[in-house]
Length: 120
Image 1: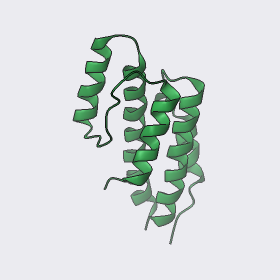
Image 2: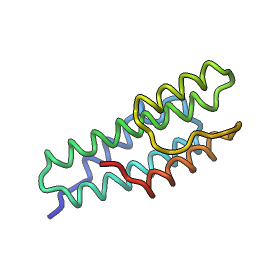
Image 3: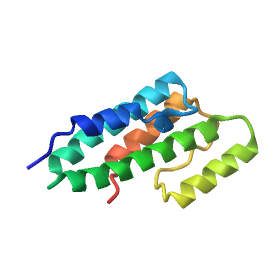
Image 4: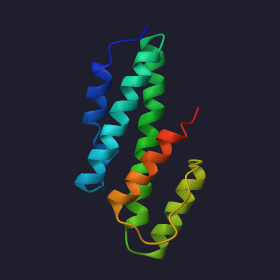
């Protein structure tokens, strides 16, 4: 059936909390990923309410992914511990990096994993 997703996409693009603390490249990747999934979810939804609920969950997951990348890539062991706790509390299933990694590379790895292993 599908619904019109323009308003949902506008909300995603305007959601500053989605990209807060990220560099331009990883922020762009994250927004594009959320927008792509928003369009898919809207198309598959039976109603506007269904779409809004699903996209709300997606946006929350996107914010958590962005926060993880930011925390993991900041200098300091405490930030990595916090990122690990965040990953556990959000039940992220992708493997944690085993070494230092650049934020865009980490974001790409995570989003690729998320696309290959969708939740719910």
